Image 1 (cartoon, one colour):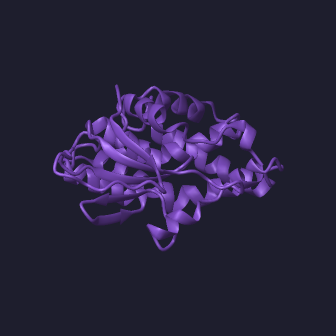
Image 2 (cartoon, one colour):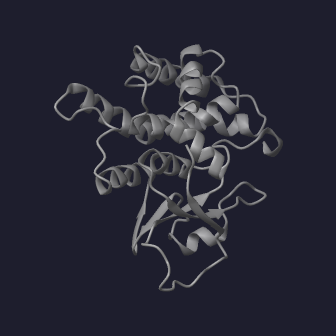
Length: 231
């Protein structure tokens, strides 16, 4: 699967003219960030985007330029004909509604739909905070505190139970919940924090085989930072 994008750095701007094609969604994408989730879904939907890249600073922070787009320096952020939308969960839901897509959620008349909604919201409401407590020391090359590792292990066991027959949360095709959780799982895998969880490691392998993931990372680079910039 190819991924059509118009890409430029944050400081580059171009004036529209009459020969321009119909307006595409603009994605403000921070390097090694949740923005890859949005590229993945757009690739699945066959929708191009105008991607503006924001490289991280030497301290691995978002650059000042992002604060000119969102007061909190948020990424991802999309601009759809002047409407600015932040938060990856909201953006994913917005895009499925905009493009009338029902292939990334289970049928609404089933309990799997509500299980999906629970897991989709669980990622940032519960799992992200737990994961970051282990990710940050590991990223700095420090030992993960025992209490942080214990809580993370509990959550990874929970996710493993939710995978059921696999290989993904709801079978062979990635749902929104899979796309949402992928960024955190990518970081955990990159830092060797899945070693005691072979089912989650296999889940990560299956996520990386998804066409939308492949297209997104080929276009914008890996979700997780490479080893040489670990601190």
